[in-house]
Length: 108
Image 1 (cartoon, rainbow, N blue to C red):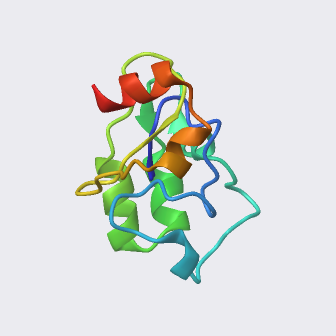
Image 2: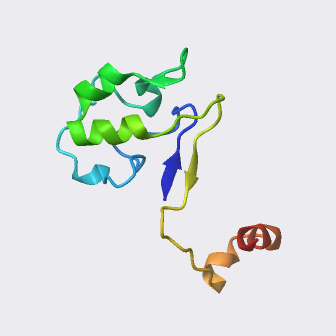
C-alpha cells in the first residue's frame, strides 16, 4: 500500500510509505525536529512542495522523487492506494470482515 497525497495531514514523513520506490524503514537520515507530516512539506497557499525544505531534509535522489509527486489540485483527504503491480487476493478469511456490498464494490 502507498499513499495518494491530498493535504498531507494524515501521512507521517518518516514512518509511512508515501514516496514511490522508497522504503522509509531503510532511511538513516531522519530529521524528526522540523518535519513530521507530509503537510509540513507543502505550501498550502500555492499548493506546491516547499522545495527548499524538501531539499534540505532529504538526499538528492529522494528529494527529486518527492518533488515529482503530484499534489491534489483541491484540498482533499489523503488516501491509501495499491502499489503498482500489486493484485490483492480475496479469500474467505479476508472477506469475513467485509460486508457483501464492500466485497462487490472491491471486485467491480
